[in-house]
Each structure stands twice: as C-alpha cells, then as structure tokens.
Length: 115
Length: 113
Image (cartoon, rainbow over all chains, first blue to last red; front, side, top):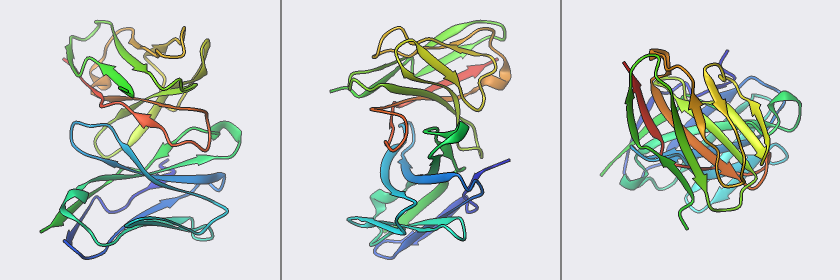
C-alpha cells in the first residue's frame, strides 16, 4: 500500500506563474517531510523540508505547506522558471517505530515550466 | 568534494549472474542507504546502514546483500540477477538517521536480460 502518494503524474506551468505540487500520506507516524528534485540521469537533490511542528517552511522561491489533519502537503514554487522543470518527489519519515529515519517516497510529479 | 559516488553508471547482466554496485561517500556520513527507482513507484528502500558494521533491511531487500566495513563504502550485491531487478539504483548518505536530508549519488542503471 502506497503510504505517500503524488496523484498528479505531471504538471505544466507558464514561466513566472506559480507551480503547486501536491502530496498525500496515510501513515500518522510520519512527522518529517521532504521534497526532492530530480533531473534526468542525476540523483535526487534535496530541496526543502518541514517538521510536523510547523505548517509552513519557506526557502526563497520554494514554500512547503503541511496540513496534518488532512495528511497533505504541498510545494509552491513562485515564480516558476524553466530551470525548475524536473521530477519532484515528496518523501516522509517517522519519529519512531519501524519507519524511524527511513524515507518513504511518493511516485513523483513531472513539472514542465514553459518559457 | 565528490559527495556520493556510484559505479558503474550502466550495467547489463544476464539472468543468474551476480554483481556488486559500488557506493562511496567522502562526507564522513554515518547513515547510508540503497534505493531502487521503478516507473510509477518512486524510490523504494532496499537496505540501509547506521554505521560501520551495522546494516538492516528496508522495504524491498529480497535478492540483495549489503555490508558496511568502512564509513565510506556501502556496496550492494545482487546474488543471482533476475529480470525483476532491472531498475535504477541510487545510493544515499546523511550524517545521521532521522531529521537529515539525504545526499544521493547519480545512480546505476541496471538491465537484466
């Protein structure tokens, strides 16, 4: 059973507009969430993270929002740039139990930013 | 500073052959892990290590072996390759297990015929 889901396989956005990537999770033990960006033929690169004690974390053009009651997080990119075109993975880990420190990934969303 | 280095980048094997995927990091990270990426499934954890001499299984460990004799190296062994192991394999490392973003290598693309 997929514990972390990214239900949109792809997203297309115009340069300068906002990109919103979504992620849902089912495991209530998850308390640390990360977004990774991946270009073809490269490994994933860490983008931004958020702990469950927060509901928002910002880093430049990237903001992650966490809604614990809905078990939902989203990544906002503003403004979007063509260089942001990549696959974005959402990942989660748990504070304890058998999932402690292990990352569970979503399926990924392909973001295409058009000039 | 090379980060996480994986070799080889590409490999084609025949069913039943064995091979070792190499992973090395130069950041003095204690935590290392192996993932496989398959279409539509994201990355799945195969094995991980919290330090030299300590390894444990992840989500999909069957058919794979690991060892951690040094802090720097974490090789992944395929004992008898099967077509179901055709995938892209990523090695990752971080200072510790838990609240630490992991640093990934560029992957090994493995095809089993």
